[in-house]
Structures are given as structure tokens and as C-alpha cells.
Image (cartoon, rainbow, N blue to C red; front, side):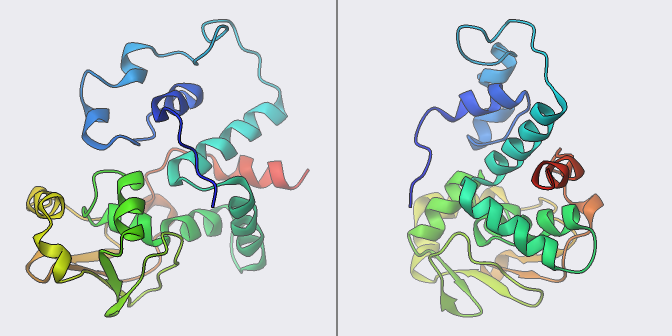
Length: 208
């Protein structure tokens, strides 16, 4: 599957917010959006006039880039969200939060979503005891996500687990570092999803 391989700091600067794609670096003075808080490119510092469509498009792109999802897959998530009962925008964010790579990141087993995607791809995690190497796998309430026994000795994973000590996990999951695992308790509520995206504008974009 195709994947963006360019400089990720350009994505943050284009959207005007931190997407936290480089983990710990995003919290330091080296963060590109702190040093150059304007869009990349020749006309990045120019005055921008966004139409209603342009604003809706930017919200969609921002959500895509937060979760590392390509256009076609994001569209499929929206269609799934629209079929479900409830508010379509909230359903969409809940689906995105349920991706295995995002859950691994939320548990603190990765410093960023791109790193979580790579660790999942390399087969370091199991869901309910079964090895899963698909980052887009959607977990459900009651699922237990664990670091494989062989992977628990990998130096990077050991550092991440140690760094997770004492950190607060999101309220819709439980973390058990003693067993190198976490459990999804329930579907997150909208106010528990800290991604700064105006989901209603995404709905309006797809409803045009």
C-alpha cells in the first residue's frame, strides 16, 4: 500500500498544528512548526484566503494526517461512520481511534502514531493472544492488546515501556505494564478524543 514518505514536518506546517508525527522531538525547541510557523513552500508566508470548501478540505486533510490514513481508506471510514447510528462525525473519530496503531500509541507503547504503525507491521503485538500485523485493524471493547513475549526484550520497546511508567492512559482503556498489555474498555466519547479536528466540517465536505 502506498504511504507518504516525505518530510513529515511539512505536514504539520501545512495544517498549522502539531500532528505529533515525530514523537519526542515535537515537544522540543527543534519542532519545525515552532521554528517556522507558516506553511511550507514559496508562498507559505503569504496571506491565505480560504473558501468554505477550502476550510472543510483542510479539516479532512488534518484528520487524515493525524492518523496516517490515505484518501481512499479515509473515505471508506466515512461511509462506515455514516451507516452507523449516532452522529456521523463522532462515529468517524471513534473508528479512527479504534485503529490498532492508534491504540498502541494511546497505550504508550510507541512515541508517535508512525512509530506505532511500524511496530505493528513488524508483528510486535497481539490482540486477544493472536498476532496482528495490520495497523488498520479495528479493535473492539474487551480486546486485550499485548506486546509479544519475544518483543518484550527489544531495546526500543523496553525503553517505551519504561517511559510509560506513571503516565496516565486515556480513560477508555486500561494499561497493565506488569503484563505488557492494555485493554479497551469501551468506545471513547467525543470529549475524550483530544485531536483538534472539527469533524462536522468533514461531514459537510463529504455531503457536498
